[in-house]
Length: 236
Image (tube, rainbow, N blue to C red; front, side):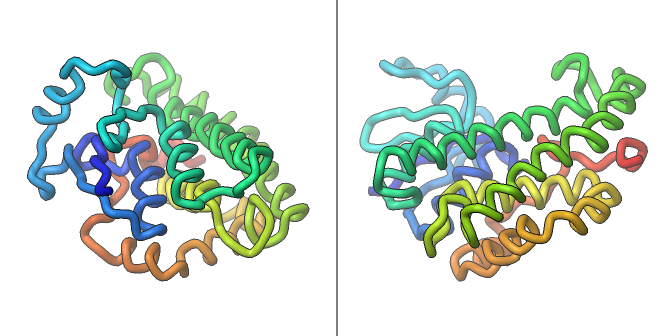
């Protein structure tokens, strides 16, 4: 089966978490919202408005054998079970889903640093509020979230779910660390000194053959105007 992945063109965004799982596992998929794949933003909007039994609220969503699966963590839960990207037992799958949902909370907070008032406003319209939000995010929230994952790895070993193989949660943590390093390079340079296990996982994921090939390809979109944005004034 070849999956159809629908997400906005031009930014990694939340679609990147799904894309990394598909790429790492060598699963066939088509980028339906990306111009290079023959799609467009108009095509995405049109598809979202198509009548379906289970409509998505927003991208990303995956179309698999006629079923539409929305929400990043939900898509990954589906792929995790179907393609062995999570433990086989229910407790293990729920644990990896829990980790993914925790990362989703962190991603939402990272976005709200540069848009603390409203997503519909420009950053420049809420810059002072963003500076206040960024201070708390840098000093309190990044250490708390990444410290949690550091402690998980201390207990589990090389991978977040334990064992000798990565799960989709490991891929997602890799992307979050990449995004934070782009948006807050000064902060992450300091934090990395106390996050040896998180940074070691980041290196291991980057060395997975399919992931390495993907990162070197033009399918990998650069950070910019998406969730993770670099404004030097927000990095302290």
